[in-house]
Picture 1: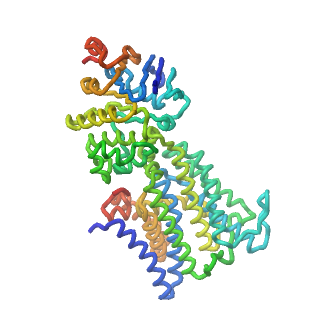
Picture 2: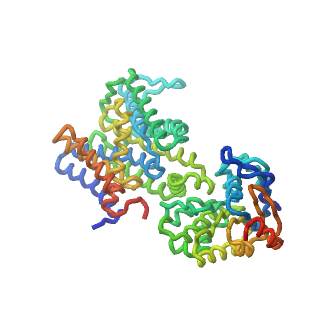
Length: 328
Length: 228
């Protein structure tokens, strides 16, 4: 029996609402933390899905934006908790423990870095694009390792989770509510973007850039804008991830994380609205349940990924709905 | 008023020169047939107009030098191309193909589907699943959605069933009668070209060898340069 994709999407959202509520009733706070982790990873992957799923560009350096978001949170919160000034050259600030401010800074910084990386890397395609984005990822990774002021290789701990007006974010379900709401907002924006003339033109660019030019569209500009939006969303996810763990480290910039984000999308379905969400849920579930059984759980993840790539070209969504592509 | 002016246009593919001196002028609202045997430089001329290859010589649209512009800006200036081989965006639906290309102007989704009712019936269908004729209509519709001042059709009826060809020729006739868009046509069917075109330009080995009113194209010229 094949499921309707909209029904499947609604089912996933219902599951993401029901599971944490059950966890509250059953007094299982760790389950809430697990689902929160899945939601944040999904948010990062939704960002990547714009450039990978719609634009067809395999960015192997998206952890850069995840890390920038994380470090934006870490640095601002560190200065706020230690009552030290953050010297930004032109002015100094005391840092902040306010989530909305941190999100804004994380998104702006990620977008700026995405603009410059995109400007250089989007002139290439295929394996060269993958290599350039990977190279940028490694540059940021090693920079973070050597950044002794903010923990270097050991990372940076934040003692108290940042605050959101009207909520106690230390209560897992309340922090989850913040993350889930942001995911829903970003999913809505993704759906609107995918169906907009911009999204359609980006999709067309993936298929044939030359033809796109003959209808008056600039493929480079389209891809660059998509890359910037994608980076900003992944940066937001990085800030939330750092808040979830109350810890940032250079591993947030690692190429393994970039690879995991790609894997999440492939598991769920490339270019599908809920592909990254389903992928993140499956990934976190495998990580947790298989991880309890064996340290080598990545082998089983690899086998699952192999099966999906070979037998379910549209990811799990494609398998369940019987539709390989994201369209109709 | 001259819309497109080409004088002594030369173009090369690497070391291999393909155009040696093409001259062509198209006025607003005029339909011009670009004719010649295979390999004489018709498609290369189109590629040069659309800045898809490097070229030299005079190439202006409404007085603006097209050589100074990249391909996408030429399209924005008002050159709509229906390329050889259709090349629709296969993964997008008919409606999405049209919306992706849309620019402000008289040509809207409704007007395109009025011109090609088949597209209206298949709005939600993926371009890859359309027949060759429907894909061709979509390619023309997509070019019209850019609201061009000059529409270029490169072998628009090639390989299509006679009934579909008739539909496309009828649509072009309608465009000629009801709009002010200039059209540059490349096609192998001399009879249909003669029916819709005001003027003709004949190429031979990358050079313009004849240009004038379509009615003045004699059988001697067509036999000598077009082989028909």
